[in-house]
Length: 161
Image (cartoon, rainbow, N blue to C red; front, side, top):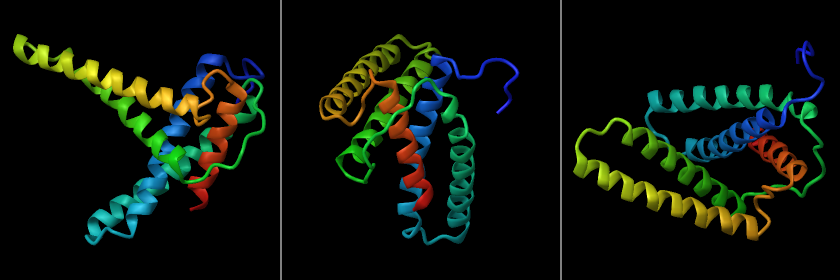
């Protein structure tokens, strides 16, 4: 890490790294689990290349975690309800973003109304899964140290599969 500026990461960039590591770790685990089911050699190669790239991304991003503000200990991450809930949370978050982008491209009022309705449903879905994760200790969003430790555990699990 280049120490030209600060000796620690800023809070906002730490949270962006958290989002990237959590999302890519879950994606890497899903790709590795799905690889055994891929029959087409070309698709299998695409999966393998994507897995290699995600592993590289995670290894590079994890190098910044020691510079994040106050990481602390956490429990072992395992593939369980927490994994599936995190996957659903990432899906819901991406859906909200995709609707936000799509709405800016719409010229037809009737389609805009449908997309706004569906985006509101996606926001409600995100709130529902986030609340579940927070209430069950799967997403300690107000405890940055626990959140970052969770990311590191998740990424290491994904890399070791």
